[in-house]
Each structure stands twice: as structure tokens, then as C-alpha cells.
Length: 269
Length: 337
Image (tube, chains in turn green, yellow):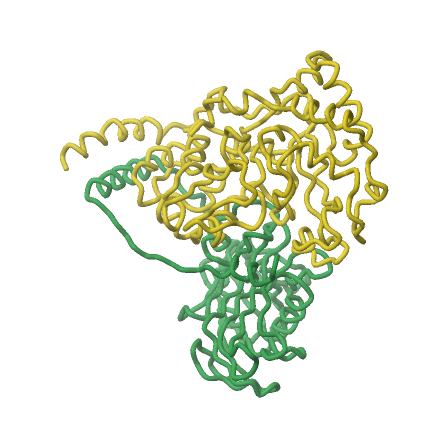
């Protein structure tokens, strides 16, 4: 089967946002909603005053400057002229290191960051009160969620960050145009959760001596910078690698380069 | 308008009754998943997601819904037809939307709970993820999952089942995938003469028994009993250089070039043509191939000398394979369109 056909399988992402509704359906749904509300159980309160919430803010940068989609960019090392139309990626498995040296896993969370959104922030919940010195997170999605069938929320397959023909999440989707290369485009769908080409690195970042203070009721912030120019800091260019559409050595190499583009910037207590 | 509202009243009544009860998933016996005792432990355990009549019926409705394709022309059931043991209608390749031909022969959908991976190349690792491939493939149903979801949620005829199965009229994609998995899980084929023989020691005639004996001698180390597949990937020497990389599409390993998942031979009488590309129309041709497989670097070692089979042996093997035809599978009204 030619690779071209496989590519066609993967890139069929037309969204259709027609909403039809009839009044009777609306009434029916309203009634159902009321009924559901009337007997729903109280959400358990997981904040017992000994844990708090940390807001993880992701700011996109290009070589130190603000990054946006559809913006003309010059790559600092390869000098390629680029523009992004898509930059989306999963962040998961957030952990914080307390001053006693122990890592505390946040309740299981998966976050789909999207440069098309104005703000990308993730509420890391159930963090025990205390002082923290480091953060660790996964760029991508852990193996377990790649092999456990249908998932919800950020991991819903309708988010189009999923390979239907080769089960697994697309950890990073970076697409755009390039001045070099035959096609004038780059299309990176990067992932891979198992074996030698696993491409979901854990990233550990120190607060460089600053302490993140977590107490019940407050929501301190951790600001991270995410710089997609790092995709091409590991030897790849859009000319040499215009397209990656599956797990493999190329996907891994690009992911390992991008990993270095995620840095800690500052905290707000 | 008023009439429509009145019509909805009985449904609302149902919702009222069901919505506050602890267990909305009434589990009728016909919809319980009871693995046959002579089968191994299934890979896909419904576990906490135990099947419900409503989940199954929702899955069935999705399976047969032609609206869930870009031009409204094909459903899952179009290419996975009960009369053919849920394989396609004896075509080499299947026709998707706008008459587009697919790239491999459609595999049958039964005993899916025992498969560790799916498709000819094993690219799909979980039963719940199987429907995503045909829904989104441009040569098959050609939609995004978001479009599938939208079509379902705009179709009020899904509301009742959705409410009953998942407690919400607005489904999410994991609901669709889980109910389709419930539907597929319950399609178990274990009612053939061969199964009767396995459980009682009776039911096969002399020719079929001769075939079974030959099968155990020459075939069952890949087509393992009782499911008649070990679900491994093997190159069976169809071509000296396979046009389709098969398993290597997934693993990128040249040693997997031209390897395909060993198909179950159950109900093979109904699922012709055979092989990943449907090249053989008859069982005689398919079995006869193993006398002289093509030499190729990845050829399965067990086939390097071919399998010495006489015409009489093939006749017996065909008789045995036909003894795995499960009449209850193709007549059971639970999964009938």
C-alpha cells in the first residue's frame, strides 16, 4: 500500500458545525436535563484545606518572541522561513517536587494545548499544601492511555489527535508552510508510545530556587514557555523532513528536540 | 408540534423512571456476554462496563446507520453482513462512500473479544478503537469522529437509547465506541458442528474428521484451535514481493513486510474471497496455495517446503472448514439489521 494512501487516510479533518434543533427536541432535552439535575449526587469535595490547585500556564514563544499561528517566522538556526497553521500538543502526568524531595502526582490529567487558543492553562488539582521546587510533566500521552480503548475529555478521538489506523495519540501536531522544500509545507504528526521509538518524554524543570507555595484556597501559577522552533534544533529541517505521519525514528527525533523548547519561566504565588 | 410533544411523553416517563434509579442498565440475559466454556479467556473484558440491552441496541443502531457516512450510502453493516458471518458480500475489496474501493478485504466481525489486535496489519490495539478506522477512512465512511458524533446527536431517534445506556441524550465519542464494542462483543460464533464436536466429541462425519486430523497436522499451529487463529502475523508466501507491506506498515520493520494477521477460519465457507486482497475465490484455491508458497525472505518457516496435500486431503480440509459454519450466527435476530 503506497504511503500516499496512508497519508490520505490520516488527513481528513473537515469540521462541520451545523446545529439543527427543533423546539420539541429542546423541550425534551430540557426536561431530561432537569430530571438529571434533580437527582444528581453532590460532587465530592476533594479540597480538604490541605490541598490546593496550581495553574500551569503555557506561553508560546519563538526564539524569545511571542509566537502566533499564521505569523512569518525565521528559524534561528536553519534560517528557514516558516509559518504555522497548527500547533497542538498534549501535556500530561504533571508532578510537583516538594522541598522534602518527594514528587507529588497531580490527579490524573490530560491537557490538549492549542496555539489557536488565546490562553493555554491547565488547573493542576489536589496538590498537597506545601512548598515546591520543581515540576515534571510528560510531553505526550502515557502508554496506558494509548492501549486502554475509548477515552474522554482531552483524549476523545473527536479531537483529531489520534491515529485511527495505528492506534495511538498524536502527541504533537505541527503544520504550516515553509519557504524551502518541494511542497512548501510541513506536516508533523508526532507520537509513539512504545518500544525504541517511544516519543513521550518526561520533562523535569527546576524553579531555579524559587518556591511554589500551595495552600488551600489559593491558586499559584507556574509559567512555562513552549518554543516550537526547537523542533528544528536537532538537525531536522522542513526541507529534509517535510512530513511525519506516524511513530518512528523521525517522530522521536523531532519530539526530543521539541522537548528542549519547554522551559520554566516564572511562578506567581 | 403539540402532537410531537405528546408522543415524547411516554419516553419522558421512561426517563423519569430510569434516571433516578441506581441501575439504569437493565441487563437481559440475551445481552449478557457469556464466553463459551470451550473458548479461552477473552482479551476484551467488558468488566465494569458490563453490556446492557440498551448499550447493545445503541451499538446495533450505530452499526446499521448509513447516515454515519459522508454521502449516507454505507453503514458498518454494508460491508460486514450477517449472512456472510459479518464479512462483505463476497467481494475482494469493499465499496465505501461514492463507490470508492477499499484497499484490503473486509474481515469478518465475530469473536472479536478474543482478538488482541485488529485489522490485517494489527494496527488497532483495542476493540473500542476499531470503529474509528472505518468511520474516518476516506475510502470507507469518510467522516471525522466529530461529524459522526454530530450526526448521532442531531438524530432524535438515538435519544432514548442514549439516555438509557449512558444517562445522557448528548453522547460523546467514547459512548459510541463503547456501545459499538458491546454490540461486537456479543457477536460470538460458537454454534457450529465443530463446536459440538469439541464439547461432546460428536457431530463430525468421517470426511470432516479426516479434515480435522489433517488440519491439526498441518494448519493448527497458526490457525490455532478453538478460535482457529493464533492472531500472529505471518507471511504465507502469496507473493515473492508483497505489494502490500502488511504488518510492516505498523512496525516499520522490514522483517514484517508481507506479513498479515492469521485470520480465523471459522465460517470461512461464508466469508470468501480469501487473503488480505481477496485473491482466492474458493477454499480449494486458498488451501491449494499452501502446497507451493512463493519463496520470499519473510516466508513463515513452517511453509518453506510447502504443505504436501493431495486433492483428497484438500477435499477433507474443505469439509472440515465447512463444519465450522455457524448457522446460529447468521440467523440470530439479536444482531439482524
